[in-house]
Length: 351
Image 1 (tube, helix red, strand yellow):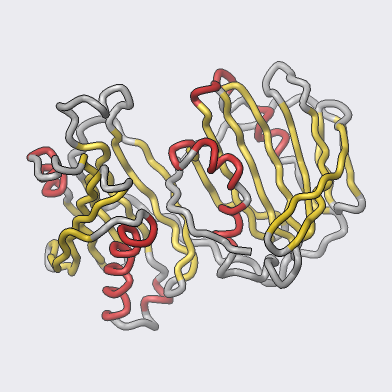
Image 2 (tube, rainbow, N blue to C red; image 1 turned 90 degrees about the vertical axis):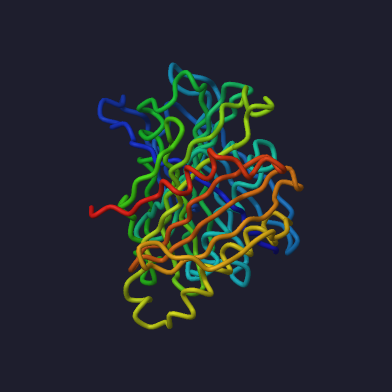
């Protein structure tokens, strides 16, 4: 099985309390070793799915009759070959969880993924994904957990008019394992970074989480604060820049103590070159070393999106924090004052 890395950005969400959720009916699957609650009796079915390594069999319990809040509630599980993935495959977990979202990733694209967060059940690793299909006014909130070699996949589908209703989390939070010991080899979750900078964005920004795994640091929790040009203005000739952003992460202190300065700097350079050359099949236009308040960094430009856009990035290591200051512009229009002003506006704070 080939697990492809995806460059995914994700929105940090303040979740709504699920207090006040009506009492639902208990549903227990003894073979699947889990229990949950449904608003009614689910339909249960099995189906096979083919992969390069062979077939797996899903057991699915679903209620697809709309209620006052949501359109459907689903949980399914399947056992994967242990030589392909297990909850002990710590280096593969992030890519595997992203892989579980390939159906919506293919139809909605990168921009459809609005949020991804770390989750766990009895110390077994998991993720939560929130997808938005604006064209059809639909939302999907999903949780996936890997327990040994068994993947659990939960989903609530809803109209965007009922986004963040209590029954979404009310259903997902009721999932628990049955007769399963706690995981003795848990995933080490990354520390969430704190904003310690200021930058002059041209409009209201969004926050997006980006948990990733890196061979040098292990799990790293990054946050992207960004402003994106409105969709109805992107094609206007007066719109030069598509996106402004600051991506920041707190690198694990214990790892930094064991690696050299050269390794850290190579990591920063490789993150830039890989993003251009491997993830977007672009080419590097410029790259050089720079500094910010005596902190080492690099600056670079490269093409992406089939040469339709150019990304201009400045990246810095400040103690145990890693910053990427980014402007994505239309190709041929990247040398503009607005882009330069934003890049130069980035400042470290004392927070």
